[in-house]
Structure formats: structure tokens, C-alpha cells
Image 1 (cartoon, one colour):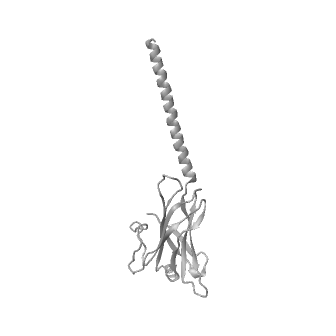
Image 2: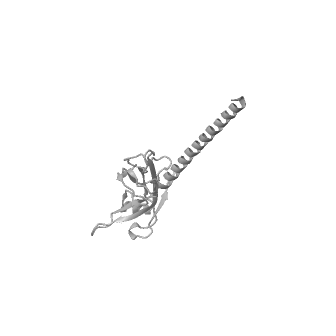
Image 3: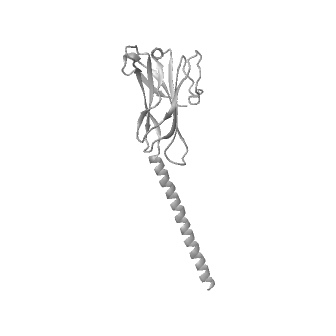
Length: 200
């Protein structure tokens, strides 16, 4: 075989090998893109759809407590797995310093006048495309009435930690924090509550 034929054979082999490598890399990128699209469109993702307040009514008893509830939406088409949720509430005589206060990591604390931060927690399950109430915060009506008079400030926050329904993906976490503005008499019903999302 002549030198030029050997050189042509080598070049041809390199071109074929390079072409196969290019196809392999392109296929790998395509597979990763398809996996990313599947994850983005199918994995369980929890969002706070809205916050709600309702009176806790007991037979023949005055309304002594209200529940503040985060309404949680799973926008994915997979259910959550191994979900752990926490909801906290605090009523304070002064406004919180949002930048300094650790909304997420506290299990129990006391403010200056001895009122505790309350916690409700436990495992939760959120089905595909579902809207489910999260753990509620229970606030005394007297404190909400005081907040209406601008003597108290009400805060509700929490988090949900969960697997998104796919093997090998990291756990996901959804956090939320709201100030509850009481702009009317809670006992009169109507549009007495407004929820202001807090961001650090």
C-alpha cells in the first residue's frame, strides 16, 4: 500500500471515529436534555398557593381561636415522598426584624413577654396536581383583635422538605413566611385578613 493510500485510510478512520464520537456526545446531550425536561414537567414541586384564615367553632362556645392555614399545591404529576412539614406562628408586641429573625430553624422560642412560638409538624403526603391544606397555626381571637388595634403583630411561617418522586434527585424544600395583617374585626367575618409575604 502506498504512503498516500495509508494516509487516506488513517484520515478516513479518524473522520469516522470523530463522527461517531460527535454522534455519541450529541446523543448524550440529547438524553440529558430529555431527562431535564421530564424532571421539570413531572417531578413533584410544592408551592404555597394561598394563605387562609377561618374561625374554629365549637358548639355553644364563643369563637376563641382562628386557624391560619397555608394551602399547598403540588404542581407536578408525581406525588411527594417522605415529606416532612413544619408550620410555626408567633404573636409579638413589636414588629420582627425580618432580616435578623431566623424564620426557618427555630423549634421553640419565647419573645420578650413570654409568648412562645408554636410549632405543628409531622409527615405529609401530596398527590399529583393536588391542593391540600398544610399544617395550620392556631391563634387566639383575643390576640388577633389586639393585632387589629395595632397592639400585636402576627407571623406564620414554615417549610416542607420532600422527595420529588424520582430516584437519585436531591430532596426539595419549600419555605414560606407571612405577616398576618388584621384589617377588620375577626369576629365580624368578611375580608378581615391580609397576608403579606416576607422575604429576607
